[in-house]
Amino acid sequence: MLAELTANAVADAEARRAVRSMADVEAAALARPAALDALRALAPADRIKVIAEIKRSSPSRGSLAAISDPAALARTYELGGASAISVLTEGRKFGGSLEDLESVRQAVSVPVLRKDFIASAYQVFEARAAGADLVLLIVAALDDATLAELHGLITELGMTALVETHSADELDRAAQLGAKLIGVNARDLTTFELDRDLFGRIADRFPEGAIRVAESAVLSAADVAHYRSAGADAVLVGEALVTGDPISNLSAFLAV
Image (cartoon, rainbow, N blue to C red; front, side, top):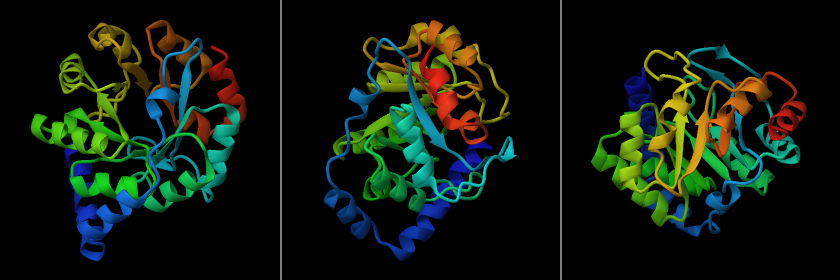
């Protein structure tokens, strides 16, 4: 499934490239104001940080929420104390778009993450052109050369890569890359099964100084506390926020 999602995302990017050339999107990316400092926003603190996600649907759960105004939801997240906003821009399975990202960037003052299946330089440039401060890189979807190339480009453009892992070996690859923001996703993107204990089992593989992000399987304050006790500096939460009361849920998560 991950390979299919990535291939489709690249194909969709190539279709956009046929309309908007690499030169045009690169120029737009370079013309943007400087990206916000996501590492500073997500730096370890005396409380957990939350990356709040705008997510309409997923392959594993289907439709989650009818989000007609992602900018308004993002403002709610920021008001509730989120340190960053994640915007799913994949359209086929997650119902997102770059337009969502652009509207959210204009609406909030915290860093914004482009969450998608990124595997080409064009996708990185269009992320910056749309105002992204962070870009997701999924280790399992990329070979070492491509991972290094895209990580370098993201850094060169002043953004931060959130390097997502799903195993000890992948976490080691992220460490070798020199990644400063590393996530462990509890959801296996092949089977879509959840393993909330994965983060704790491999947490000792995080390189010194890296910010530790726990992704998926966060439905309650108890889940946040579980990750916090295992060493997480931040959690990325989507489903619990879009299907419930975002303000009360954020308040409970931040109180951990």
